[in-house]
Image 1 (cartoon, rainbow, N blue to C red):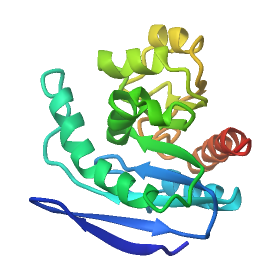
Image 2 (cartoon, one colour):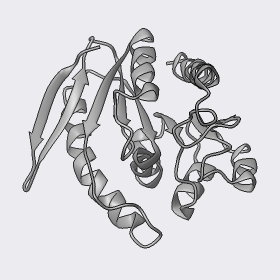
Image 3 (cartoon, helix red, strand yellow):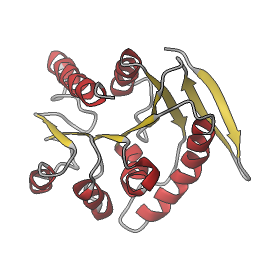
Image 4 (cartoon, one colour):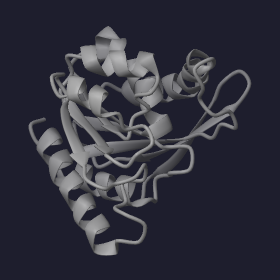
Length: 214
């Protein structure tokens, strides 16, 4: 699943990304978590699932020292979008792609919920949110009010899990999947290898169902 390593020079920095190009008509932009990068299980198998369903991939490589807090969530959204927007523009300018999908994990759900979901050009894009940071009101409200098709996955042992919020989100448009006994990495228990693999398998099945209708 090797891709082409590319980079874009903006005014003050170099933005790197990997583009796995198979000539398909749908593109999936992936946004990693702060300590959860693209070779970790969720992204590795999500990449495999996308290619299996004839979807090209873009993985944007970023890292930030600042952790999101109530006071800086808008600032972090802007910092991330300053890195993400040039890549999206660079990839879409050729006109090769008819459809787009956005997939983020944890930190990577911030730009999806706080920016991309609200943009008119991506109203028909599918949104896939792994362990989103729903303790931030802006992220929770955006997902709750979204009309996008897509998938929302969280473990009930994730420190961001909130039963009341999940109950509300179950009425939203995105399909909600709660993984029992799974933590913020969507691993089950402390060292439950088989159960963690089974959970990963269920998540990938739901992902396949979500993207298959492209």
